[in-house]
Length: 239
Length: 260
Image (cartoon, rainbow over the protein chains, first blue to last red):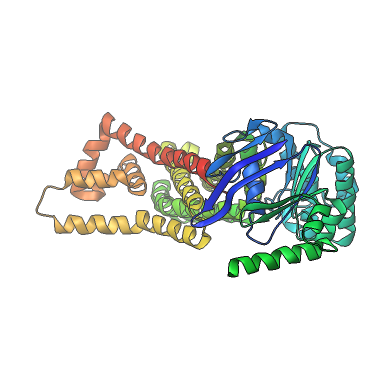
């Protein structure tokens, strides 16, 4: 469904993506992992057209995305940090995004699901970080698109909201959506992901099922496997 | 673009700063009118305030608004809309909300005082018009500077310096040059340098409109000659428009290539 070919991106002197190749199957649930600065967010932002790659191509369903914008009709994206225009009300921000997409949305269902009704008439500047994040979730999930991209979705959520979000993602998985998410929380990966994309220094180090990574590193769980990658990688660069 | 503009505008007119800006003009105009009791003097003082304050507020609000809404802009960038629509929508939303503060803040006191019965209505409209265009010019430049600078402190500094240059330093250099080269015929130079700075150009245009160019001495006569002609007037209006349009084009160009 998504195909990255020979993607390169530099920010100044910093090479973030180095000749990256990656293919994401339709209907797969992918956790994008990697140390800080390995290019996770850049990978996602390139897909959404927010970062323009220096070279290489990205195709969605066989169509190149470069310079296009209509393809984003089919993508739901939840950014890492939720920050909204401070003087708009919650219901206004929701109708703004609906207005932009010009489509039916299941916003009411999600507002109820996350218990946001009491906040609908409040200005966004008066909301706590967690509530803002819930609004962020509603905005990302309400259009029911086949491709769902979540950047650190669990940021700032309380345990109850976190549980609800996991249930919501699990439902979306059952409905056959393609999901890409980044996280630092290993449990979330173990619970949700089918495949892991492990990025290291701007390249795909490993792509495949969780079990494969465990086998490759002879580790008993994902945490140990990742620790092993980190330590061998540090050794390699030190030499 | 219209959708983004609409919501940016709604967000901004509810902000405390728009209210403060509006109240400032309201208070200033009331004080000037009711203490002076002379509508044309009030208009001249208003002009002096607008041509300095309008650009300053445009620059500061432009920079702050861009940087503050950056995270939300990222969310918008992931929606199916063109990049240029997002930035132009935000820019026009801001410029229009500032212009609204200006029109209401100045308009209400002048109407209450009885602007429509005085012969000054056209002079009043011309300062409003100048206020608009200066707001658009400087907000646009602020947006461009913010787009070009990832570093907020640097962006803010550059924007303030730009304003300082146009509002103060430019005139200083201009005067120094006039003094240094006073032996030479300088009227073309004086004319040209005034026309190139939007703040100076606005000031000259209003002074001529108010018919007090005699205050400006010899240069006033030269200016009157130039601006009095159809060519001169249309040239200066075109230059002001150019000042407003060029930053907008630059914003679109910059936004196309930027990484977020």
